[in-house]
Image (cartoon, rainbow, N blue to C red; front, side, top):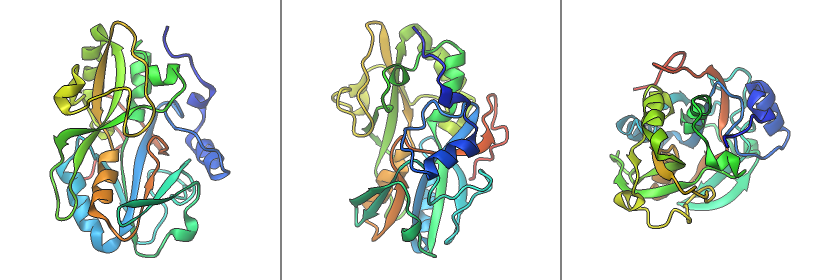
Length: 271
């Protein structure tokens, strides 16, 4: 049984952002079908060049869509959006430690913050659904599971760390089709980085994700892993910056840009 259509899937991006600004907290998987979603990381300007370099060196995990700042909180990707208020949930970091989880970070938004927006796998999920490929996390009403791996991202100065992946189980016969669909969406992480044995990429227990929620596999399912934008967040955490703001995993910025297949469409991936 495939995922049923949800009312959030037809919500326009501006309406979704308004609901989040008003205080709604929800994972954005399944929201605003056909529109690009983005990860958010904001760091002091003195660290922004190196962090941008990290993203450019790791385009599968961190497809860079926009760089905003310093001090600005708007983006051409989403008309009228306030990056301080329009995501469902944020995390605040100090010296590598999580110090707060909030729905609004306007009072913390300093004039020297530079924000990186990177692509998200939630963007391609509607294309998988249209192809008849089930999304188990939506069927089960949970956040997508995400895991640290033994794959190493290419470092840039103080920024380094593991590649984080998101996992979507599906019938084995559908995995190649899913890979072909997502390969044509490089701004949303592109093709999977691994299909099959979790241990091959350093994941010991699928039932214990590092981020998100565990998902039950069906008997004929195989785990399919895509590079995840939390890779950038992990690099920031490991760098132990004095201050940083990120989205909470699974709680993304929904942009006004239309998602496209067979190329980047309206999205220009920054290099």
